[in-house]
Image 1 (cartoon, rainbow, N blue to C red):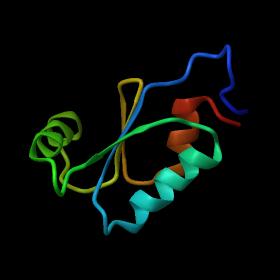
Image 2: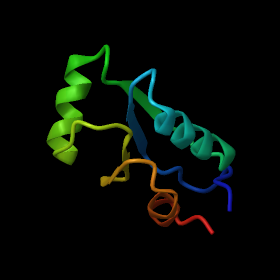
Image 3: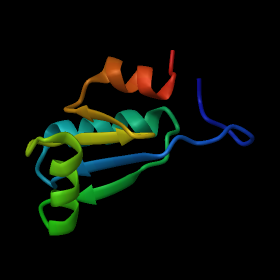
Image 4: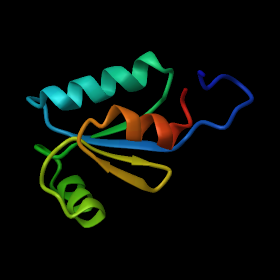
Length: 86
């Protein structure tokens, strides 16, 4: 299932660092499924890092915020469930 015109896009934020391979995998997964997202680089954005830790209680990346549901790490099945993908 792809999110197309007429269907409300989910609100997705992904907290990343430039050297994180799982961050790259998560972003690629979102792109492959037509999901728009806002990327926050916690290595260069201190406010984003604080926001990520407050939301997740974690220092590790990636952290995804999908419509308020927090997913720590690249957990493909949890991401699919949060996005209602088949």
